[in-house]
Length: 166
Image (cartoon, rainbow, N blue to C red; front, side):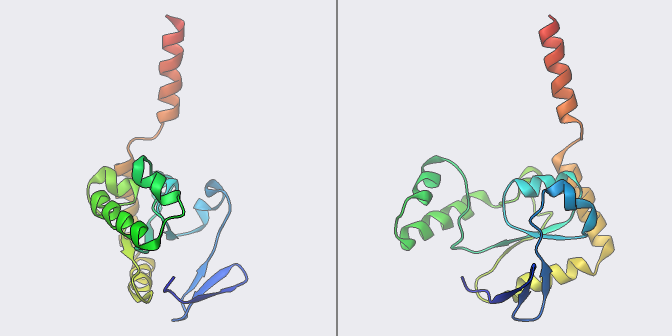
């Protein structure tokens, strides 16, 4: 609600001139084609982590942060902004991190930037990561480690097959 940007075809251009290519395809279709993602909290952070793709999360204190429980139910009701703002602030304070890889690692691997006024801090974080290949590689490796060893679906299928065979 406070950031200024305009759409230019599929791209988002901030008031400071940063061009961000918007992609709304299935993740597996675009993962090989980008170096860094700008994203919001959700399943996508787990997918990016498993693929070792560095990302930056953009958050706003008034933005919806999903989840269950009573707070999640109240979030979806047409309540006043003041009450929802307090609920969101409590959730941010309790979560510490909104990204699954960061939660699993219990530390910030991928930056989670809260945009309060202009987008300057978000843009700088993105630019710093975009221009530093060593940091991209380090972050990608740490994200993959935080998400754990690959092959979970195969191991689950093997476990089910063994149990059925009993």
